[in-house]
Image 1: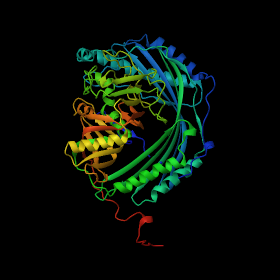
Image 2: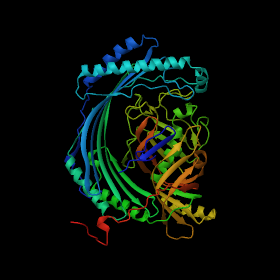
Image 3: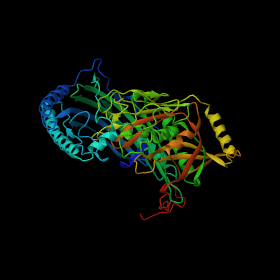
Image 4: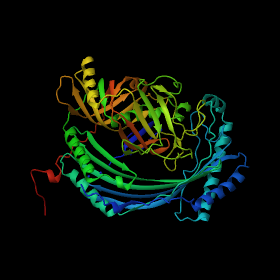
Length: 584
């Protein structure tokens, strides 16, 4: 998935968060998460939400049509952002807000106002509303009262249209499953979270980071962004769920842009993610990442274009993680098996082998770290109030399960904690932490040797080593080709005759999932992590994927789309060897 690109329903975009280097790390005192209480106490707003919920269910549950389910979610977000470009500060700000979301369902678990008719989703009502950050129960109840009325009216109107629609009977037979699943109520009281931050050290840091990138003539633009976010959530629903929990995340993003002589835009990214202030990257780590990005950019702007090919390829662990996320992960999201407008690639393949038998894939949103790295896809409860679970999707190559929200399937009647959304959107089944396991591992050096062997066996002049991937997109709709496109950032030709690897550009991985997933022949022995933000119908959500390097016997690549713009006629001012003057 691509970085910060608007998402259409036809294409699912995922992104590695981009955008961060010298080398003055903020002192520990400038970045502090407040310690949680030993015994967390319920927020006074919980009682206000419950009181209004009881009042609403009593009244709206007696209307015609009746509301059978109501949920209130209050999200308190504290956020600080510091951004710099080319040696100067772009912005520095912080803020706090609260967002109220109300969900009302009319009808019954079997058929309600969310039911799709002829593949069309009924209007979902209000995305929510801002509410005051003061802990004033009466003010909150007024906002809840108004939002509930708006949501009920929208849900009632939608249900009436659904019940009078000619296609309902046909659609119900096609879906063969209720519209909403019955789940065990969850009750949990965790600490509300916040952080204390002195932005001044980070302001100087982003200046220094981007000044370092400016020293290279190959870098046209650089942006470094530091973000701290604390998000606390209160959730109650008419089934008895009552939740209070929070999470703090920090991110440092490095992003540089360059342009080849033929006009092709070249981007390089790297990001650090952490949840404990003590785990912030040190100067050495940031400098190493920055130096690597700059070196790769300087090589890429003068590297040759790669021609479209089909042949052996080796994807490093980070690249392989994105590959699995795009090629498999989106097609294992439960709602795509139910929706008749979707391609339903795996809907009828439960119990069948879809991967080589040495591969197992799980989605475990309860996992906080892998190989010492924090996982962005970790969460305690999903956005429908269901506890996160470890879900085995593929067991030794055999499809076993899907990532399920509260939109059930005929043979999967319950959620496994994967109903997720961006604030203001309606939850659907989404990935969390997609983890690839293998029992056919060799060292990465041996995997490279096997790549060369495959190249020789197939009579090819070279294979490809794909070292980093920004993201990609995949088509899952029935009216479109069931294809994917993954966007590598760093690709090398590995020659069969032993010549040094050659850096190339302009490569996009393309293919169809059922064919591509069966071509994997071996994996490396070291997991690597990809953290990013994935966009689809329910907006952008944080996700992670972890995989060892993979060797595939056949991978198709095409030429990347190129810009018609040429590089600037003049070099950057600091790199102009002519040193021409100007008017004083």
